[in-house]
Amino acid sequence: MNFEEIKEKVKIKFKDNPRYKHMEEVVNMALKLNHQFGVDVEKIKLAGILHDYTKEMTLDESVAYLTKYLSNEELLEAKKYPSVIHSITAYYAVQIEFGITDEDILKAILYHTTGNPHMTKLQELIFVADAIEETRTYNGVEEIRKAVLEDFYQGMLLMMEKTLTHLKEKGWYINPKTQETYDYYWRIYGINK
Image (cartoon, rainbow, N blue to C red; front, top):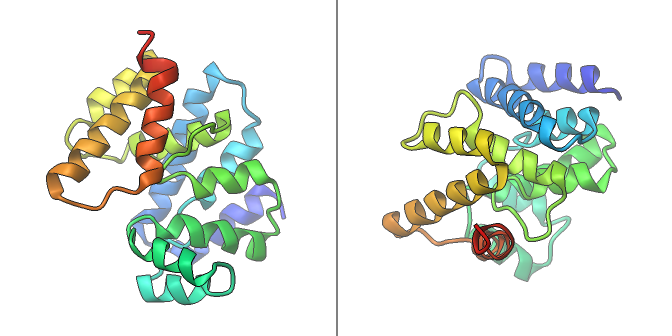
């Protein structure tokens, strides 16, 4: 199945749901940022249009779906982060529904919410594009978007700092992967600036 066929299937699934516009905008932002990296355009388009493919599943539906793929311990851990569990369900669903086997695309989908140390350029693009695409309107997004466009990694660090601060202020449980990602990229791009 090629990108246009996949995109059409996603569009039909999400019909009038604004989620589809967000998915398209992630593709657009990642392509815009790609001038710095030269990542395969087809991979960007596939990861971008599919990253939120299972976002509309409830927590119970997500857990039920993941029982086929995760151990009980992994399921308990995934349930701690209901706002990001869709990245795990999408990782599996796109393999089954679209035959996606490219590990870089799959990991870009899996890591788009939390990030991951040692991400590839594709994974970094989807992680950042998801947070700053043009329909995002949260407080500070313009500053982050500007920073990313000026210096991708400094902007990415700013994005993660603001995310971690927001989560702490709300008293929400922080996924350890998010902190690990920030710490990893800070060691590479933050200390030397």
